[in-house]
Length: 102
Image 1 (cartoon, rainbow, N blue to C red):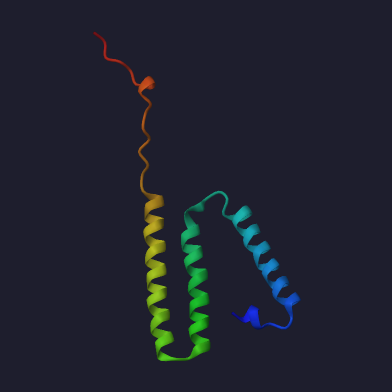
Image 2 (image 1 turned 90 degrees about the vertical axis):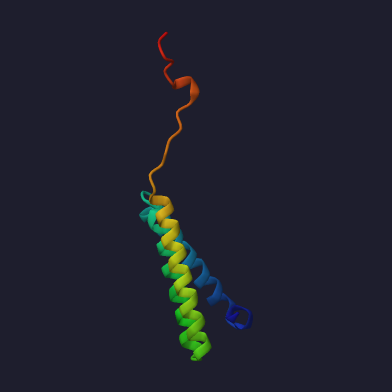
């Protein structure tokens, strides 16, 4: 929203490029070995933004909506992380299965 009303477009574009580059470097270099932490990382990032918006608005409804949003994001991140951590069952192809001796 603030980008639509901004007068310094160069600052907005530079901030977006720097933020995108840092996110790309972090995902590409740090998290490339273990992507199980990505749901929690995204949930925390979004939660910080929601809480910052609620603090700027300073209304009771903003606080309630921020609490609901935070709880739902963290619950979803927990569910996705548990899904990623479950043991995988690898199906053996039929050609690789041994045939019983007759």
